[in-house]
Length: 103
Image: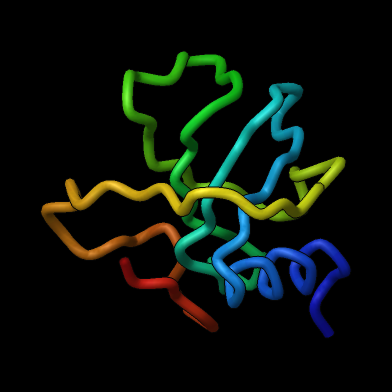
């Protein structure tokens, strides 16, 4: 059975809604593109367009791979859908994909 966080993120993805959360102690603003599992753990591939990161966020945003267990304080909001088409190879963040949002 999926976690409440997983279900919340999946519902937001289906409506192309943004996710505001805390991950590894940093405020993040995301558009989640892929959700599923990696080695049996719930995981997402998201485009972080605002907020903070230990590595910083380059202008225009950055792709992030995140375990859902480490995501806290999830808020869902309407807003622009952010992405970047700079993937040159297939994603490996999530190996059992349940749902993906394509630009």
